Length: 184
Image (cartoon, rainbow, N blue to C red; front, side, top):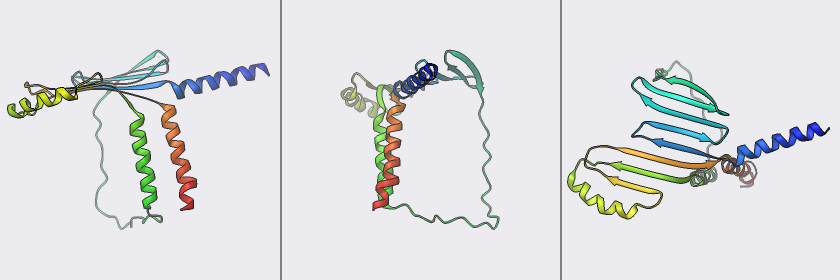
């Protein structure tokens, strides 16, 4: 009986660890390096090479490697074969559209910006010269936007969120769609 309680407490602790640990999304277009990391649990790094993209995956500190080659996608033909398309029986009401919009807005605001660096060139020296003083007003601790005159574009983005926030928003969406929308 004691072993069951210990196993249940370990599972509960692991579930809390998954829900409360923040995950980080990192994108660097200049070095072609993109990663998704969850401390201790998971890390995925994709970086560009001459032959396409290569990936490294770490699950509980165990490394896995793989080559990611460009995939060829086969699109279905647009010719109709005599089949009729289904008409949705229940059109989206304005209330549902509002609920989905609020969910997407809350999901967007749940991500926390840790770092944003962007450098770009418009190709026009006069516009670049006008943008330099304007963008110095935007720069701060987390956001740095630069204009260069060397025709390079680069973005470095680091954002953070945790699964608990996303699960909470999903639960609120489910409650609103299941119970609140039924009343109206």
